[in-house]
Image (cartoon, rainbow, N blue to C red; front, side, top):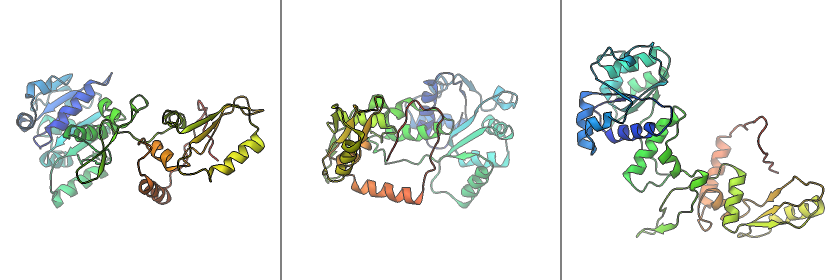
Length: 322
């Protein structure tokens, strides 16, 4: 990992802290001369304290360091923040210091190189350098803030950016992922209202459920899952229920049948998103959240960007949608 003198030192510190929390990850850090200055200006840490977050910290002038040799195997390199000078040097293969040399090694060995460039606005030279590097296979990940996760603090924004950087290596940011709603963090956040009337969420931000079982559990917790344990026939009982769900009404719960005659192992869920309340719950939101506009946008995206089905061999259980 390289840190340069561009603004954005808190991003590098957060990345080091995130990597330190991931088992079996060994980090090698190089801080340029001006990175150390930026760290002192933008963070409450000293360069020595930042260096201590890495397993190894190399001098920026040490061309004999392990990471300056291709025979030293690594998974790749992240330069965060990446100055335009460093980016230009990487493109040209100008390995003046260890940051540039290590990046040059990663490129020549065909490993993953991720640059997090920090500059605004961007000149034509900057853009052309990024385009050339992208064509070489370098991942250009500018630290642009996202707002769909409704960040409450600057730290939320930093964590989200670092999580997207770690995604490039298939790694998860433990603190940031909790913000996106893993199963054990699905406590519902209350709605709040600002002085202007716009709504936002306090507490942990929740993302949409990605599997039916967790979604049904959430419906049950919210009182939106009607469990029917009496024995029913596949026909006409289930067929009649399926025909009726379209006329049940806006606040109707989902239906859950677990005692179907002749199908001892079958469980049937109906009307799971048959109401706006259930739609809201499926997105990880409180049931009373207006979501029609979001749903219309999802439908538009599905029409424009269809997703190919993913086939899984021997799944633990199956979801059959009719």
